[in-house]
Length: 112
Length: 110
Image 1 (cartoon, helix red, strand yellow):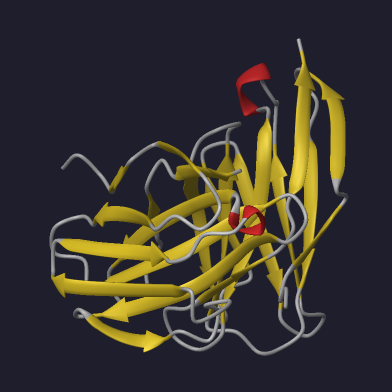
Image 2 (cartoon, rainbow over the protein chains, first blue to last red):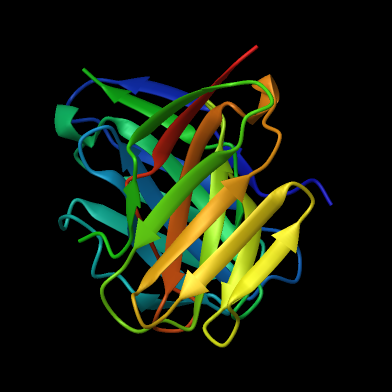
């Protein structure tokens, strides 16, 4: 298996633009997680899905953030409109129930 | 909010020495996990210890868990320069959802 795949690896955009981050989990994993990592706040869980259904989105910072998982092999995290404070590394991870999580390489987002 | 808090925040040692990192948490857990993150990379799972276990080994890694003190430690023996990374503890206290600590930055000097 190729592991968790994220795209793009780097994204630079201007304030106000829409940003879409993509994730392909490991095949067969039931759970998918979106995290954000910054120096100031560390690693934060934004939202997670079980069998494509959002279970807990309490970590989503604002209505500008939305996430979808239309099928077992694909998820998106969208920010609209983007702001400079959204600059961070966004990680996707997947897992079996009650097991370790496998992280993707991350998307480094810079909003200018 | 962070469930796990690592101590120390940064650690610098010579190659061959042992490195010990500690993690404290606040609420009851199902399991506790340790991850490593190399600069610019995603996190890599190292070891998972369940709440009914006290110690676990994996190669040069030794993890202990004391649920009465709500603490865990990660010991890396005979460290190598390649062990240079940030190490995070994460607690699973609600089934499948992990809460990560702030991490320990380990530097192993050759």
